[in-house]
Amino acid sequence: MVRRIGSTVVSVTACFASIGSVTGKKAHLPLLQQPWNRRASALSLGGRAAMFDDSSTGVSPLSVRGGGALTTPTNRRSPAETPTGAAEDQDTASLLTGAARGGSLAPLRKRRPTSRIKARVVMCYLLCGSRLFQQSMRNTLTNVLIYMARDLEISTSAKGSLLAAIATGYFFTQIPGGALADTMGAKNVMTGALALSALCCALVPAAGDAHGLAGIWGVMCLMGAVQGPLFPTSSVFLSRWMPSAGPGRPDERAWGTSMLDIGISIGSLLIIPVVTTIAENMGWRNTFKCVGAASGVFVILWMALAASEPKDCWFISQEELDYLEEHIAQPTPITTTTATDNKSTSMLGMPLAMARHPGLWAVFICHIAFNFGAYYLTNWSPTYYKNILGLEPADAKLHLMCPHIANLALRCCNPALIALVARQGHALLASRKLFTVAGYALATAALLPVHSLRGASPWVSTALFSLCNVGFALAPTGFKSNYLDITQQYVGIVAGYGNTLGTLASIVGPKLTAWTLEATQQNWYVVIGMVCAANMVAAANYAKNAVAVPIEELVEEKQV
Image (cartoon, rainbow, N blue to C red; front, side, top):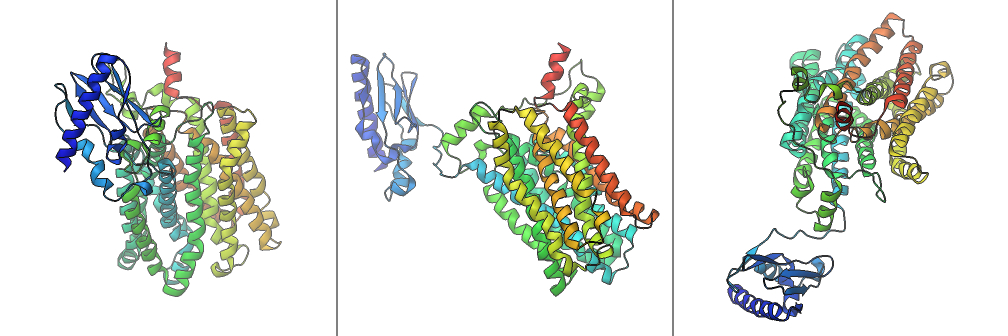
């Protein structure tokens, strides 16, 4: 049946092609409107290609030797309108072989399905989910640490060491992970990182039973090591999927970055009631196992739907694929250093002049201050509520959730705020600076009076912590989105360096806080003052030095 249809089509096509060649007029083939022609095929006529393609205009030109132009009107059909058995018919055009005036009919690339949901939106939601589970695994320790202290002797300094374990592991794998994502593909790296992280989370209780606090620290450090590539790899992932802002185009990269942070906020928020409830009823050991198992289920979903680049996605529409290929700049492959490059450049993975550029360090310093301040709130809030405000974890549960709810609410509003700023006529760089500086200023203003008001209702402290977390939701909309502005060629490497430096703050922060509290007899004024000072230094430096164009281009222009 298929061969008979193919033979008929070739004969009819050759006939109409001859007519077009003689008359010089366009001929239309109603026969080719049938469903089986929805897949593109090519007809080679005397060395010239003729293509049947269901294009958005409904007419696909056929190039015919001799000057004739043969067009084929096509009817677009949704999957719901495709009759039963059409799937077999749709494959016919790609299977046809034969000759028409010495030509042959050969299949072109497979036509992609149409979809009402943009594939890049699905990718951003998947990325949001990856950060949700990453943060959930990371924050499980923070929220069950008090329950663990009932079974194990954990001093204040030991708490600081445990809280810094993940960040310690992070430190060593972010730069290699970012470079690996640039070459292997973001999906592959993230799949391995998420799967191994889930396994580590489930193994924490066994390590604790076998080796005590040292075993828990070791597994948490290993979890951090396998999670290390996730941030730089996420930046690579976004750079391949989200087009940059332009005339008549929204700032989708800022929206994509917001989805990353929304995932962090949701994970930080949901993990509090979830692990507290599990720990109260099943113990802290089963809590780690449950979180690890849930994360493993997400890995399966990620493997089924995620794609490193648009061309690798099995459900992206042809229209969206064409749009992304047009509006996303393809990175230049990183080559080996030339004779003019020095050894330092090759070791860094990017030009030395770029590594020293103030615009790069404006982003890096903001990342350091963010990790120091935001993770201070996340890591030490349960201890603050218990030791200073006198609330046990079960009683403080709602208080601990409120800052994350406020953070999440603001992050959900960020795309609308970005659009509002753009409508006011502000340039991209002005928008990045506005969100970053305003975020850090708000966080500082809210955090400064917290300890002075500790004698008031705990809800006063909760309100101030929540307002502080709103500031920490605004700032990344500026500086984290800037990672995708400041480079096209070195996205993974730059993001790896930035998050590694931020991780230093995550390592030093808990230990510095614990040391300060012990050295000053629990003086929280000093700790809060350090966080506020870091915020303002980062904001001032960013306002002065930030850029919103690829720094490698600025460096090249300066050298010329």
